[in-house]
Image 1 (tube, rainbow, N blue to C red):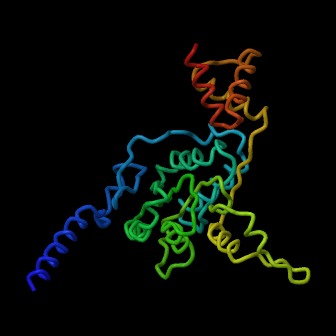
Image 2 (image 1 turned 120 degrees about the vertical axis):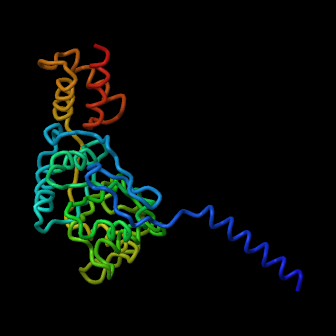
Image 3 (image 1 turned 135 degrees about the vertical axis):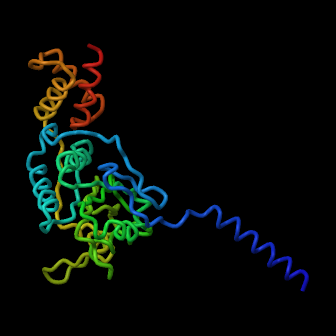
Length: 283
């Protein structure tokens, strides 16, 4: 009996130590929404982000069609009309994340708020939905560079929140996610090999259906594509003017911009901005 008591005592002390190392439960107290326009979900609570990237919609070049689609959806949302969750996919550095930040700058004065959530914190989605329910502000839940493996907890949480949970999704909250993968998950050749052909019909394998089912729950898909050389040079010239170098891009600057892109293996908007920062800083 003494051995059992000692064992139970040690087990209780061990449980107490483990509890101290576990994350604290989510705090369901809403922050002061007027304290900031952007927030980040960290360790079960919303942290204001007073200093965020103040990029403007007019600064985003080469993505006019994508910008028009997403801005229209956001305007509907801010005005209290029906709008869709948005999945922005495609080439890196083409303005997916910058577009979401620019929308916040455009519509913050109309009550728009941005909540950034990491992939690992998506399991807390029910807590966030509860926090914003009933608020006058309109919230975009922003997930950047999103991709999953099927076993990750955030995958099921996001899938349920979008279109599968019994809990009603708050009408003042939308999810905007960016990803380099259209279906948000890795795709393998063996999955395509499992596709069945019945007569003239094609039946995708269950693993393929599972991957597609998540991305299909976003009502609006917007794809971003690599820029042409002329588009890249136009973006670089725009940022050169932004940094105070006025006038047309001369041949030396044009050659330097192309060499900069070649060294990085990309003619993206991000690369054009980085070139302009370096070129303007040297002068």
